[in-house]
Length: 257
Image 1 (cartoon, rainbow, N blue to C red):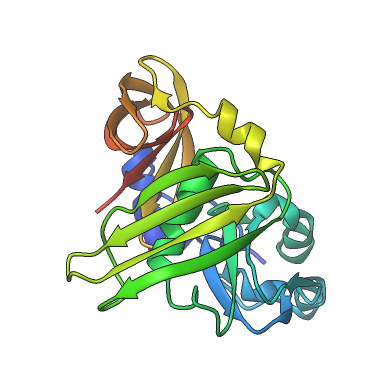
Image 2 (tube, rainbow, N blue to C red):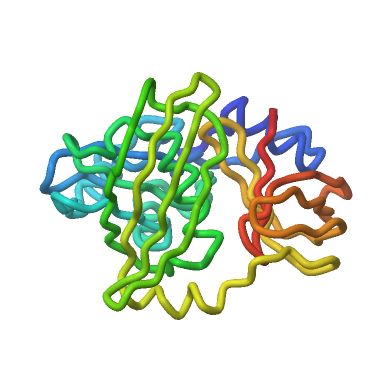
């Protein structure tokens, strides 16, 4: 099962690395938000593939993941990487690193842009580890059309029972939404130790985003900044410099046109 990567991935790889051709193997697209009824969600609901899976691959993907009725779940690719390799082979190209499952009918449904930014923030702050985390998502208020753009404001709130991340997002059309995510108590230590500045000459993870596609590469900070502020990073593999937004002291996001 060997195919060329999709044109979008080829263009992105060419922009980042100067590559002129794609790599062999099946291309899997992981970064996405899935709305589902409480119960089980098949793994293939979390994965886009550039080809139709074989019967053997469908069998591997038939293993499911439980979706709780009142939580938003973050699922790192590491949680099901073995199943993906068994289904598509070790030469598969994996684009993206996480999925969010949103129970259908909850207030989180339809908040795809916000959840994308929320996931970036939680991952960048180190609040989510290598295993699945169950996050309680609460919408406090919403007005106008659901925002499809804009930069959310996040604030970490510590309580005696848990750690909460409150958010507020206002889009260019005037619509706004606010609420909070409640994290497991174990996340408290990560909040306390998270770095808040991308320091000059430090090595960081550079997260390139182009629509639904995410590619991560190591880079070096040549112009630092605090969380939410611009920073300039140098990518040794491509010998190019990019300007992005600081997610935390160890990650910078670059949104490609």
